[in-house]
Image (cartoon, helix red, strand yellow):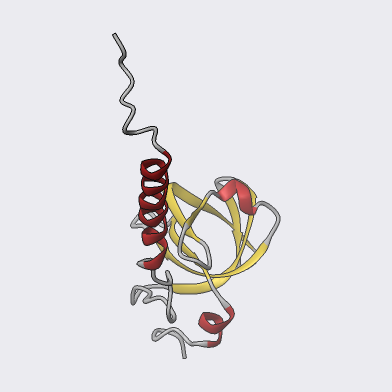
Length: 123
């Protein structure tokens, strides 16, 4: 008993299958759009500061010792999440929001264009 389907192994059908799989994989690249077009919208209660992660969750914010909240989210310049351990020792200009207990909960690392803009709450 021969279990192989000889039609799948003909050179013409293999080329057709390869062309279809290539077209399907490339079509995913055509519909992707840039992740970020302009400055990100920040919440109205966002503040600006200089962040240095010293020993997570311990940070320095504007030169003062502070703490990240459990579950804090740090978003990079491309708006993707970054782990605090990856930022140890770096000085970054950020916008941040505190949680009700006063710990830093949401952090956005600013691009040059966002850093040039003033926050609505700042003079």
